[in-house]
Image 1 (tube, one colour):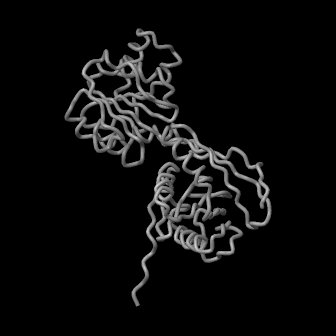
Image 2: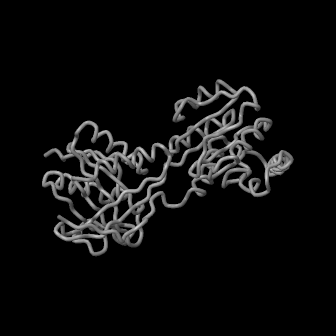
Image 3: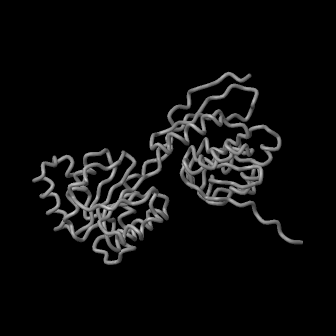
Length: 324
């Protein structure tokens, strides 16, 4: 007998990507179930508030574990969609599913809702696309006839990375940053480099022709910025513009000697000591690399470390509602 294939899962990490799929279903009228992690004890592969969605064809976008229980959650979601009733499930310690274990230990509770607040989900998606935080409130309950405490989760925008540079390291960093899910923006004086990174950028990259034209960058607290030049003449204008924003990470390529000269030049341009301390350099967790791909990975690891806070934050678990 031919073995039945597992239902497909598209592994998406960030809430905005799961909500993008939700928005598609809402606009097309396709039925779906929203899945949210609402309680974690001990180790976990995912954050509290992580999202997934399952449509009526059995396609899942997002995930709750590293594959050990996601197929069961998918099947449970399809049952909820068919019955029309929500379900609170617990996996791991204290779970009734003794054949489904969590290798990382602890326990995970997920809320499976076939009738989520679509207006709230669409509003959250719109806010995250506009790079502003969004909140969603969930009311998980094992008894639908009782009032339950609400859990409000704040979701941060996806990390955005702006690159200014040229050459192999510029190209490699754009490629790797795109592969790991950063929203990439590019600036370069070299048209060939811009052509090479266009496929990795969220919007067409920008050709810069003079340092005088570099006056403003669109960066926020969840944005990183890197200069990736071996000819460092372009750096000052870009760094001054980046330091004029609330960018969460500002870094520059080069040696220790180059970085000391860079900071001295910025100080002579009137940059404050506090802002000088924001400029990380030489970038990268691994020093003295000579391979473009490895330099890119090392630099992006440092940026990931800088943004290592939870993308989801529990705001309030004290809210409650009256059940009809």
